Amino acid sequence: MLKVLKNSIIVFLFLFVSCTSSVNSEKELLKWLSESKNGFVKVSAANGFVLSIKYLPPEYLALNELSKDDNNGDKTYNDYLELFNKSRTFLLTINHEEESVDASKYGVFNLAEYSQRIKDLSFNIKDVIFLKTSSGHKYNPVLTTMENMYEIRNKKSIYMVFSDDQGEILNSEKLDIVFQDIFLDTGISHFVFDKKKIDQLPNLNFLNK
Amino acid sequence: MKISNNVHYLVYAILFFLIGYLFLIQRTSKKIALVNTQTVLEKYQGFIEAQDLYEIEINKMSDSFDRQKALYESKSNELKILSTKLSKKAIEIKTEELEMLKAKTMQLGKSIENKAVKQEELLLKGIYNKVNDFIERYAKRHGIDMITGVTSSGNVLYASEAIDITDMIIIGLNKEYVEGIEK
Figure 1: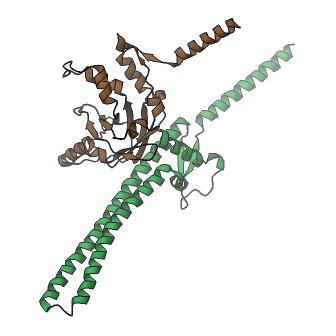
Figure 2 (figure 1 turned 90 degrees about the vertical axis):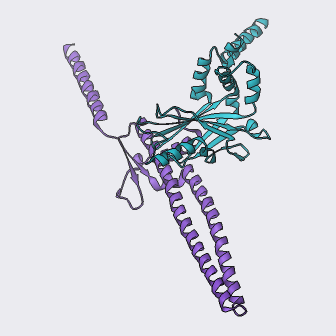
Figure 3 (figure 1 turned 180 degrees about the vertical axis):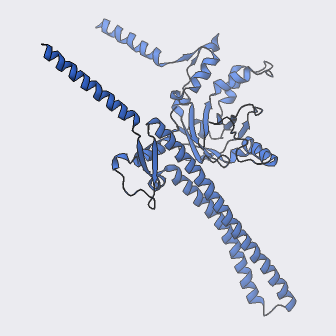
């Protein structure tokens, strides 16, 4: 009887260890976040454009802040973690299957229109993107910013931060990010994230080293 | 014994030939499928949502036009009532003001009409692009060489149900609309 119980515990422990994943470096964490089965990335496509939204967990953002050159060491990982725990940050990436097509130049015919498009993608995009919670409330991003790639690649990356005073965004079971595209003819796209999945990061073993 | 062996060889040869022939047919025959585009649009969540969005926008614009129209009508009635009491000069001024208001109202109506057409074009373009993109991926995934779109006024007079993939396209499109593309 005792032997059976012992074997059951071993099997349980083995299963527990196999289910709780862990990563050993920032590089591994990045790879883990990009794997679609983990639920941190959602993809939509139309008109040759591939729109992808990745949830950036507070842990990743905190690590990112720590590694920046302007970090003079007065803030710790936990300080940043506390800060980023109050909001949800997503990264929208737009690229086209053809190298020559770029979101900043699509449907643009002169310099004034190009300048407007850059403004639209950097700032005005927050008017056409919103986050819908499980209760149906809609929230526009409190901050959007486009990563400057200096037109090296045909990829555009836009960071979006969602936050509310009531904490509904943090506690909603489903987070449906809706992009009502008026720039690239890709229509309405939904990117639905599951709270259970995006709040389940693997153990970050490298933090304790 | 020898005859039996010969029969075996013959059977093997026939089988080999048949498999080769079937393989050749499989490789050379083209797969064609058919989609009822009207049904796809009617049942596509993206189209339904875009339609709702369009209606909300149109209603908003109509409200502002209705307010402007009501203002013009009220001013027009006011002038009719007061015309007997006002001087000729005052009537002229009021009439001029009213004409300006009428022109402004008509201009607003025209601008709303143009905006509505543009909005509809934008929404439909996005939807068509999404549907076309999905159909292309679906065809590639299922090894289909050609997918024909059928409309009520189209040229396809008969097609077997076996090649009608409308339901599959609707299911796939709606699944992708909510869950995104599976990588």
